[in-house]
Image (cartoon, rainbow, N blue to C red; front, side):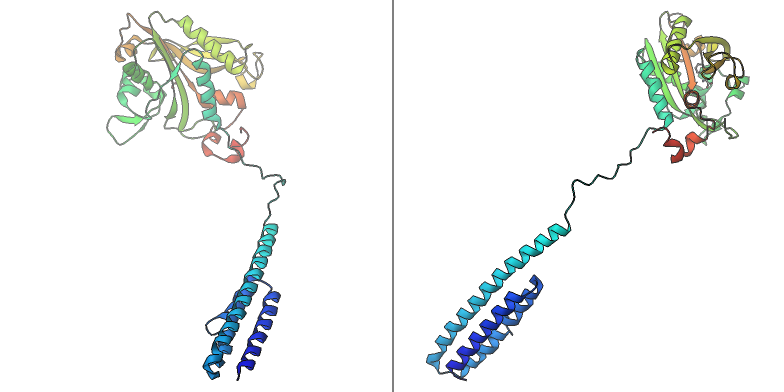
Length: 346
Ligand code: PHE
């Protein structure tokens, strides 16, 4: 091996390497080539091993040639690398391109459950008359649910509310929203216009028209000189806003221990308009809520002087109000959260 051989080998290696680099199909092949030619155990190192056989004065010449060969190969590798990586990126961009003109997938939109939706509508209507929402707990005490509402422990009217008790003495799941009347009177001073929506519980044999959980909206107004005429006017406006401005309404005598006098409030049948049909049991009227003037005893339990303040109260079943609008036959549907039912309201 002399200087000429070595020079030839180096030039051959360069020619071979440049051809291989030019032909490398992708960046990975290029990396492999680099290792094979310029790596520690690569072909260039292999050729240079022959340098030991040369005379010392010849060695620098070979070193210079070897450096030129290395630079040329490195330059070719770099250039080819840029080209390959550029076209790989282009190919990827093309393959992963997003067609922004493709129509989007529709977003599934939620809707209101008919019960909170109805409560919101009721609250909006009474809100126009200055009624403000108050909250009251679902676990109540016997005092507020019954006794302070003028329903003594042995009062036969307790039979109206089949009660679910909790295992804390003197406590129960409220059977109606009326205990909120007491709580509101204890928390704000007259004039009071309060609306109390919420879930109530009764121990019922469950069927299409009886549920053990249901919703009510209670309302009270307490002020000096509040009369039954205020109650009647307000409820009439409510019914007209809810069911139509042409709807007639009426009071019928009713009974609740916490109101005196008590009434049932009817709106003309929404199905037959008053002529009489099966939906209204041929009466022409549908009862939508119970109401009355707050009993003096209740005002007293609320900490108010019944000689000075009068008040009225009303309470309605939300499912019933919603049913009249949507003609839902079975109360249980409101509690089951079956989307096939709920989507009809969305
Ligand atoms: N609390 C009564 C019920 O559950 C409804 C009602 C409320 C009646 C307020 C009169 C006044 O049936």
